[in-house]
Amino acid sequence: MLEALLAGLFNGLIYAAVAVGLALIWGITDVINFAHGEFLMLAMYAAYWLFTLGHLDPAMSAPLVAVLLAFVGFLTYALVIKRLQNGPPMTVILATFGLSLVLRQVAFIAFTPDFRTLPDTWLSGSVSLGGIAMGRPSVVTGLISLVMVIALFVLVYRTRWGHALQAVAEDRQVAALVGIPPDRINAQVWMLGSAAVGLAGALLTTFFYVFPSVGTVFALLAFVAVCMGGFGSLAGAVVAGVLIGVIEAMTGYFVEPALKTVSIYILFILVLWYRPRGLFGRW
Image (cartoon, one colour):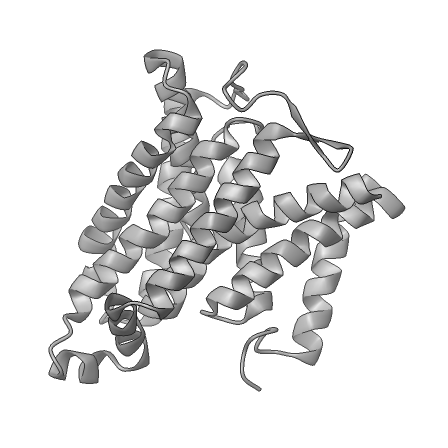
């Protein structure tokens, strides 16, 4: 049981790392990025091909992949979101949804639907935590995700730039009047949120399959975490992500592995039934 609990905790930290990038973009720019899962997929393929063609281990290529995804996030904002954000909200939603479909279909065409895995990497093997054997890739990925989440919290809530982010999220027009450039801040937020999912995606290749639809597996859980934690709340996304991982693991241990997903959505419905704005949302 303790092994399952630890596995759920580390998986939950990974879910939190994916969700926090989505929550950051959603909370600051007020845009729901339905292509967030496909950004994760791009990061995983980038890490996979850097290892396959360039023999660069994901542990080393993760920062490079994060920079690559930051550039993808910038292009998405500059070419799509910025041009549509002054229009009806549904236009932006449909645009990101369309982008997700395009990226997924391009991946199917370019890489085929085959499931791909990496051979032994630097993180391969197991590690003992208090006498409990755990897979080293998931442990290291979970710990790096925790460090990344803490760094994001410090950046957003303890720096001058983070205060500018919060000002733009509070009132875009007033922020512009006091000299804060909203468009530049929004572009930087898209870069930061995309880099976060890029780092998580690169490390996921060490123990998870790479295939064109892999983004939907994690994106759906990320959306659940963001909604359950409270729209735009970074703390809520992290807590909900960890909670999802633990509930998933405990359901697989005590009940039936096939019911893991069912338990997550039952929890999601119950939370929103009693707190429609999420765990960290205001009443």
